[in-house]
Image (cartoon, rainbow, N blue to C red):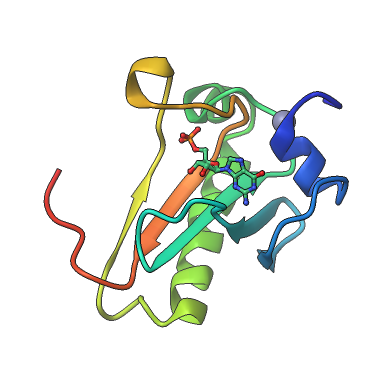
Length: 112
Ligand code: 5GP
Ligand code: ZN
């Protein structure tokens, strides 16, 4: 989708600091990090949110979690711990309607 920001990052049309890539996923640093480590993992396949992705391509959703584990290890937060979250819909603060998994870590995050 040419008007989707994360599709454009996946396509290399919008610059981003890519930290990891697989056949089905791309991971890049969040432009406004909410933690010392804040990486956004997106499926290359466009889907508006995680639940829609689960329905359309459950294997790709699993790929995202597998990639998150690889990113956590590469960022050195796999032992200390990290948070994985999907904001789903406006009330949750979703602002980009291309499914994405936030990986936050690098310090104590507090409870939610
Ligand atoms: P959401 O609020 O939809 O769950 O998360 C969207 C995330 O994308 C936000 O954390 C925001 O900072 C990040 N973001 C928005 N625009 C850009 C961009 O152009 N580049 C990067 N790297 N991150 C972005
Ligand atoms: Zn998209």
